[in-house]
Image 1 (tube, helix red, strand yellow):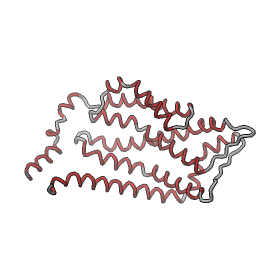
Image 2: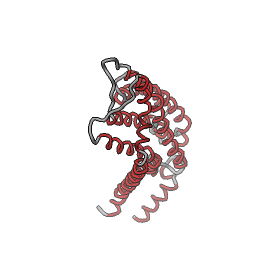
Image 3: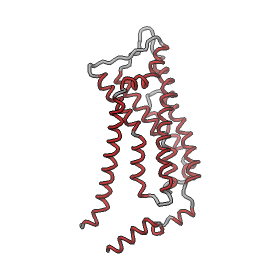
Image 4: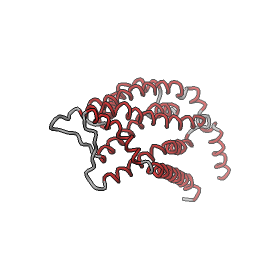
Length: 267
């Protein structure tokens, strides 16, 4: 196999490596910046739980191992670093898939990056401001005179980080489905026809991601149902039309045609 045949694949892997390196650097910078405010960040993260516990007269958290508090603060800084780096992470991801787009479709690139960050922030905010308060009240409702809730720092961080990231990523659903519709992978009739199966998957997915209680499962599944309907609207507006499918002949795209001509000249 000659060098020319290896080049496209190796260049693809090289691009993936470079984008992963830049993503890790962005997360690292966010981690270092967040570490200086780790105690305040953990206080903000635990505010919904502390408020709910305060209503029951006990607003204290514990740590059961000597290094637990230290490593918990490290993880809080890392979680914050990931959240702060989301603009870079989404940018690198969409840049990696952008070569598969036609030139006319690349004009949507920057709005896609912006909307990716927006929907992620919207999902995480929904989990923090809406789901957390009601969910914690539900869990703490099982406490009584003989049973007291004493959540540890480690357990709470693990629970909160999973929930915030889960809500952030599931709220990307309208953007992903709209993008797939633009690429011609799904259509509006397909999304409408499979709506009932999607709803079933939402409840199953919510049951797997959230704690085993009906309240938080419904609070994740219901927004997903709304987001699915928004996805259908987005697919209807930005989805590939029939006339565009005819025009989207790869040989007619200037970028691809120029690349093909160059390869023919080299041959």
